[in-house]
Image (cartoon, rainbow, N blue to C red; front, side, top):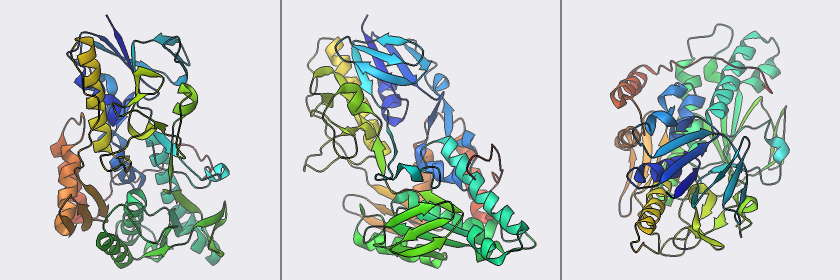
Length: 415
């Protein structure tokens, strides 16, 4: 029986595994976490809107009904292409077909020493760490008598004007100006300053310019300071330097860039500037047609030659496509030679009352777009036990500005 090894249980890997449920093969899913994470809602955990259990579910539970599928909790060390073997931390696993869907990590553009000062948002650990830093900043501001230190503690800087940066800036502003407004006695949380920094000329550059302008204006109405065309030149524990301007802050959050996992080193394949492997039209690598790379780890070109965006719908489509190719090869049937991406649109939320949506021939913004954004995210939750429960929780937060996950947990680390 052929063995299909899937590295990573994100959107691409998980949807590939589910597509292979009825294939006569031994399917093995490897991930360093025991859960599948719905990354688009990580910012809600980071800003105390949702508990982690609302956006992550055990991989074994999701795949429990697939009798041909097993799960390994382990981490990839290397891949021996010649021997068709993946070296994990605890064992080595041979394969006949390999799907690499190991995702991406933060990119600091050569300033990796900033990582501990300006954490990014890619995992539950990242989200709870950022939540701890945000909430602890308010607690420390409540205790200090020094006005300058208080101002520094109540200054929050988000670097990167993509969807994550925009969503974080809007929700932190609402957290400070509404949710926490009555919780403190010696400080006024509404005096907090939230600054969103983008090196490019506009926010959400993948969207139409009118939607980018709307996002900027919406954030400014929430009290967010938006600084465009101003890259960060220095970052330390006391603050950041932006276009020569020194900003004292205790909390910097990085949302400026991503880099692929070490797939290029593992597979010894050509990569682009972001570390993504340049794959064939069928998403296989140049040296082995039975090894596929998908999601954020792959550079995939669309019909017009532009890279396929690194978003969840693209990863899902790639996972299903590769699984179908493998299934047909195993069955001795002709398989598709080229992956065709079907773009469903871009969505981004800006606080609790507005969002922007761009479909192929239609753009939407405002309150109705926010509700469509929420419905779309609930619809696409994978393995969630009760979408209705999450819907009710979100509605309650919308009405009350409440954020029930305001818990400071974990160690201090670099806070």
